[in-house]
Image (cartoon, rainbow, N blue to C red):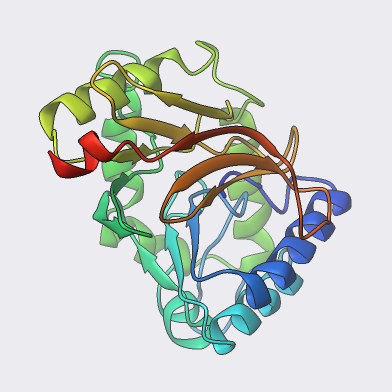
Length: 251
């Protein structure tokens, strides 16, 4: 799953995320959160943002129950660290991540900054915002001042869906798949455009979309990858799905 933007999203979105996490805790082998779970996340030495507290508690329950949780930093929640890793038990990472999920050789990135021309300015800003000095400086601000300041800035930069309807990230997925023919799956988030398709070279491209629009997620097993809508049921129907191609697996 990705892009719930808790802290901006309405209470109904957080309730849906929490119900999903409770389902994951008893039904999943692992969970990947591909960025922007929160609209804003920052860890002071003794303080964390109040919004999303119930979700953090639910995530800790998932991890405590023995289900591995990996969280890829998005452009809105890229200031995590000790609390997420040590207190919550999440494997919090700065992408990209390369590895196997249910036997599928997979590359995961949130997707911010992958468009060559359109994201050039943003890539420069990202380097500045994630610099250790900038993080240390921001930590000196009182949370009651820093949180609304950061949230206002992130609201100004976020849209419900990508202006290019996800085409830029699809092209990035094609480039990624062509550069590494061993990949079975490329997974992005960020665009808010739910996508599951087979690229020209046979690699699958998946994007679970945004929970701001509709709570959707990708369900991955050893033989099948499916896009599903979360409706609170343990038996959510497949909206779209692809089975493993043996020939692709053997290459």
